[in-house]
Length: 171
Image (cartoon, rainbow, N blue to C red; front, side):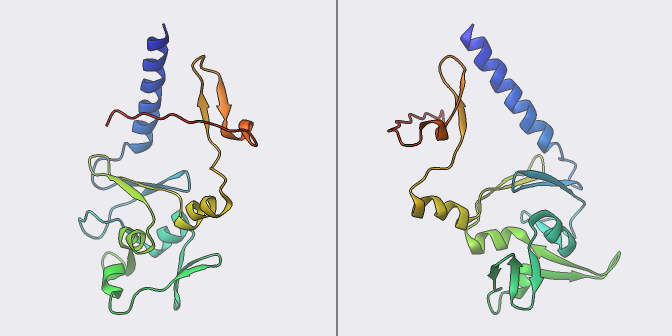
């Protein structure tokens, strides 16, 4: 009974991930950023890197290209000297567009990213500043998981108590 429920939950989770990722025609691309799914049209060239227009850069990530660098709120990352062509590319057809290499930017700022080539989906994890915030506060990020009786619990339910987390992965 429990194994059937576990398999049903796993199938449901896989179904949700696949439905969020069905883009694989090569023209449509999907980006999961800050927990939201964004559809992008084709790129200017075939590449394993994620190139997006500056308009899409702002729409998806809220980063804006400024003279001082790539900025979002108070964060601003300068593009390294001599590496502009790694980050920016201009095309004139079908209309003038400036393309931004989001993959190279993620590498520059150590922003975790995963890419599924078959589905044309990029997933961006938490920004390094957010990840490092947990280290300085010594507070683990909150999450919810079921117990052995499939009752949901949050880590925050146990704040102020000692908690032992046991994890396992098949890979």
